[in-house]
Length: 160
Ligand SMILES: Cc1cc2nc3c(=O)[nH]c(=O)nc-3n(C[C@H](O)[C@H](O)[C@H](O)COP(=O)(O)O)c2cc1C
Image (tube, rainbow, N blue to C red; front, side, top):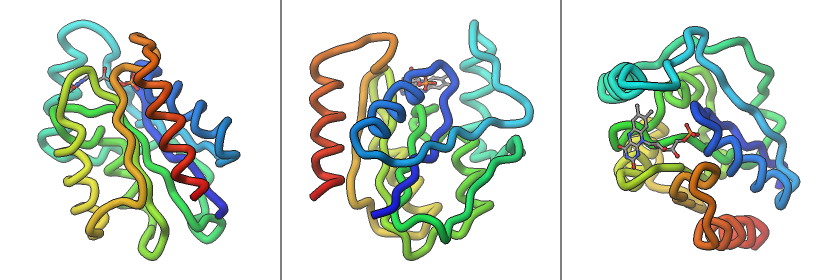
């Protein structure tokens, strides 16, 4: 199934996971960037990013190359922000018609909230759920066997 991984990452954990999944599955990769970057350090990072997520903002994205007709499966990846979807992903799903696609999802978090974020994403996409889900704890900044096992299992299910 022709697959693309569409993801946003502020601090490279989601980027790490996206590249691992692409390596194992052969999927294409599309990283989206907001035109106005979120702060990546200090208190401002949590304040600005957290507020933007809670307000369900959809910031303007840098131009990107994507044609939904080219893909049967979309894997969406994002860092959990305030138990919500990272806002650039909200922008992407507003800008593209993904209905009828197989949708899988993965999220990186430092503690909890991914399940709530998945529910919000499903609701934004107007779907019941995802064909495959993966939750990781800071896979780049806190590497662990558990994260690697989960990534491998996710990729195995993609092939099934
Ligand atoms: C604005 C903001 C809000 C966050 N909210 C949560 C949260 O609700 N739950 C959680 O477990 N981690 C939260 N985190 C931590 C990130 O989800 C986590 O570190 C993730 O691995 C970062 O992915 P990235 O490196 O791809 O940006 C938050 C981080 C930021 C910057």
